[in-house]
Length: 405
Image (cartoon, rainbow, N blue to C red):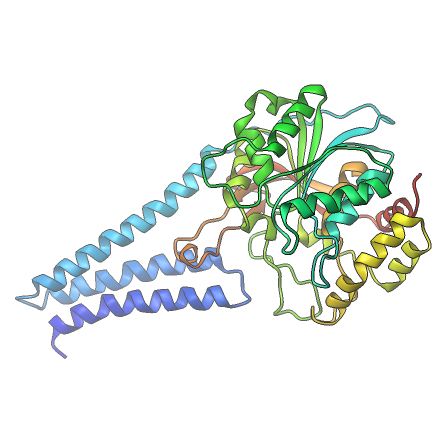
């Protein structure tokens, strides 16, 4: 084959092979973003350079030279983008703020930001309602208010708020429930009823904010009401993962969950990391170590009206996990662990770490590769990452949910 033709084919084939490789990584079970970025950049540099070397054997290959030069420029731009993103994450890292602890025995004021579905359908998650009920019944907490956000499929924003009100009335709690964002942030960050309600509550008292769904409402609060940011004791967020770690809820290694709350609104998670507020991460990876099965629901049925309602709403979700969701022993009450960590931090093992939004120039076009990465070393915002829960937590949670203390 003439060298001039090879000089055309080599870089174009290299680009095609690289993108096919990225598609394969994206569709596979492996979380190999960092490896894909490293290998992909190496391949993208290799093929155009190889094409330029072949051009030395051609006397008239100006079009191929132009193509290779353009490809090299694109590769250089992709490399610069990746390095700039990493540098920006490093520059945005802040010194770990001090968490203000309240005196022992004093209920901790909390605001819950949730995406409740409460068993709206058999495949609708119930963990937000477990968390709401636990917050309403834990004497260690003072539930100041609730805001709702998009996330779990099913109910509309108004219906989400009504679900929360129904549950709280059954728990004997008369706290405001405010509908919030029904879509990810669009970059304009306008105040919403939810952000205004949280800001007003913070003007009255310091709060811990438990963010159980996409972080849109909380980020809107931070960016539109900066005057109250320093009155936030800390943000407890359900999200984060170690690089290369996947969430396997069942027994099958190839089935996994994404970092749901992060992927639904990445920009809002970044806003939380940049705000300088103490952040505690309660990840899915922790929650899947604790499951709720049929015996646990039977315990709830023997409780009061709220406990029985919660058990009834959880039946379809349990069947979904045990049947369609790869033969699991039970479902994981993800968001309830975030409330539990807020109420009983001594039952959780949480370590200092650094968190950053991962980025890959190869997986981003496929709307993948945007996770909240947590490592003990490297760049990122200082956070506390919870990776252990003690056995007494589950019976204590069930005891609180069965009846008011």
